[in-house]
Image 1 (cartoon, rainbow, N blue to C red):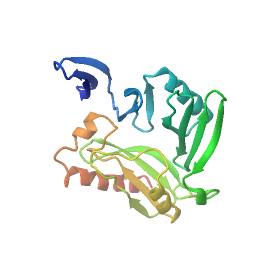
Image 2 (cartoon, rainbow, N blue to C red):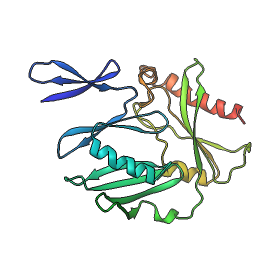
Image 3 (cartoon, helix red, strand yellow):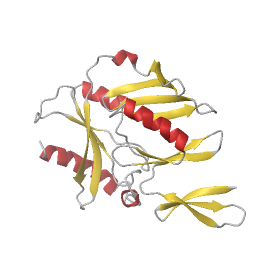
Length: 233
């Protein structure tokens, strides 16, 4: 009976019957929503620039996430689904240098059991280290970026570079396992993933700065990232 809209830095609920608008939640850098398909409600807002941050609007789902995020500290935990009675949860656990693994969380039994690994062939393989950084574009705009170093790369070593822009432009990369970045890094390359102007998830100002700049400043943001890494050694 209503639609949810992003409007002036907030998410609002607009009724279809009369068009009336009610406040729903602040939408600072909100990237997406998590829905409960059975109850047809929003259970969380996902925001955060470097790493995803979940604001849980549903206490039951939020409590389960809290247990799992503490159990898998410093890794990305995603609730991919849950049973209708909310006693069992399908969980994806990953990290920039940790290939994704799927688990089943049985809440009443307080048990987490392994279901599957996405890349079992990478077990015990050395993976690159990803970090989050920012650099200045030539017009002064701050550009977020992810940088992945080859496994065992020495500090200060001058290494070849591959720039890996995401699609979109209204899209983004994540502080998470990226099979392509890891493959390239395993061949001895530094991988730069610039979140150039027009990218989502880092605030309206960065996204809006990309309007009309496809083929212009969107592209020079990539070149400025190369220059920044080269200047830093």
